[in-house]
Image (cartoon, rainbow, N blue to C red; front, side, top):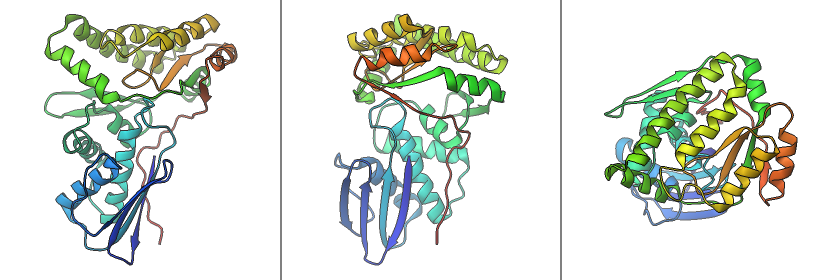
Length: 302
């Protein structure tokens, strides 16, 4: 996700998404309406204006996101981090990475009332491969993992990223998960505990180079995740998943909250070519990607 802020001669505020071609223009004001259009852009502006004050000047806030909304890749949270980064750079705010991630989380979850976790904001801010620990009272520890280059190269080569060509509202799926926890649904709660164990298993496999275990670990996690809410998976997702495994994938997962968006498959050896051919038959699209160690980066052009 990318965000830029330009100052304008006229005292007006323009917010626009270049990828979705949405645009709103306002006369100068300290609060912009949260009305269902461009809420992420306006929400960050409102919070920054409230906490730090932006001097009266014209502003054009523009954003661009590579992945479609509702894809399960954390696009909303990543976009909030990018917009926040632009304001941090503009106002020279003394934010650490932890400060930025928590602030972005607070805007999205509290100011904008969007349901979800907090891993996406920290992943976008820190970048790289991390083992994250979440505690009570908003305490978060991000542990960067020192993984050998050859392991990362093999992992990147063997993972296939597939877009189902459908999107969903993650907040609705997450609300059901929260409801299941509040109702003390034993099956759902136990599945969450098992997903936490899956993260530990994945950490060990990456650090020790046990890459052939990755597929089975993903598969185990997918089986558990389906127990957390009824709409995480569906018939179409199950058909794609089963076909990918028959073609050679040893496991995979639905990305994000589930219900649609992207799927990820681990394909050992050279099985990914057969898996990709199979996935194309379902009408979706295999997307190219690359790992990066860079998180939030900001700069000023004069």
